[in-house]
Length: 263
Image 1 (spheres, helix red, strand yellow):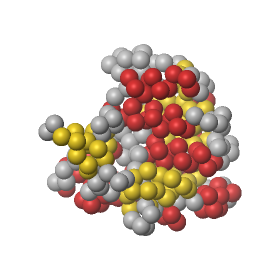
Image 2: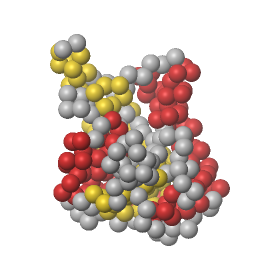
Image 3: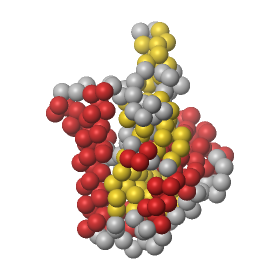
């Protein structure tokens, strides 16, 4: 079992990933982002994107109803279907889904995000939350019949409403249900960088015991990614590799030992 998270940047080589997966045997589940496309659509539609940084230092997008609409266009619409198109063109029988479809990924809406603004601590509430469970029956139906699920946000909350969530957290809850041998995180870098300004400073291996320190020292999107990975590998034998999604053969490179191995 292989779980692959495809980052949402423009430089990710979707056709290269599809080409590689056509040669990889066994069940596969894909989770993808679309942040670059979302931001362009939001700008074209005149929808403001606001970033909230919690008091603990984790950044997230403020998900009001307008942004949820843009997200549906970008993630569930254009990006998801272009990935499915690319996979199908390479002989990978992909099915595009959001967490909403068949209640594939069930979540709990956030009670509020504690942020600091103007010297005060405030609670910000929006349409976002944490994934807590997956529809194993639906996943099993697809995987047992050799389909490749291509999954993205939104997920469905306890009131059956669409909410935003972190795709890295979705990867974690899917992995808890599926127990994959390997989770691959394809990003716009060669791996986890010791120095984010030095593309050549790839860390080859991060032991489980070192993840908490790395997470504390990281910033931006990587900080949240490491938090999700730490929870994923905290128990069990799943290995995680952070690797370059821009290369000619991103998945083949991972299987050849490139990237940052965690665990």
